[in-house]
Image 1 (cartoon, rainbow, N blue to C red):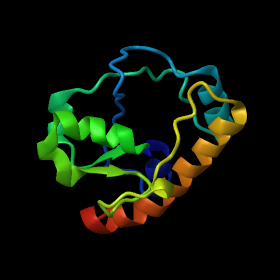
Image 2: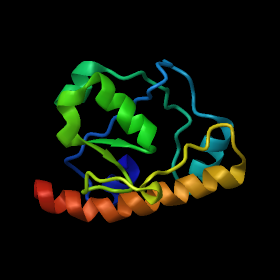
Image 3: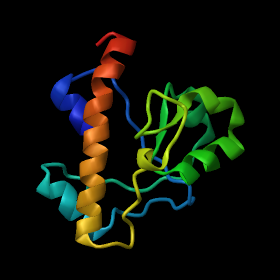
Image 4: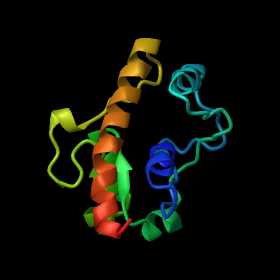
Length: 136
């Protein structure tokens, strides 16, 4: 999201990433680094972070890849219901099987490429909506 927004808009968006597994300071998988690099994005220095309640409460939007991730966030933060979306269904709150993006961790390079392509497509679809909503 950060890379696509910066290349298209250049300013005005703060992007942060957190995971529901509570793992802190782990690097991306080698396949994630490789597939991102193939697409011109360097994620090698990124580190995992657990959910941070204060950041979630301050976020305008919270995107999840898979339905169970969205449900996990809402289990602990039900008051954020109007801000938590599956990336693939935004701006709609209703989810379908097609609106999830399977997390490729533990999968093959093909799985990572498929997830990367799906995430990129959704982000490119969403950026014009965010620009209109927030005036960029």
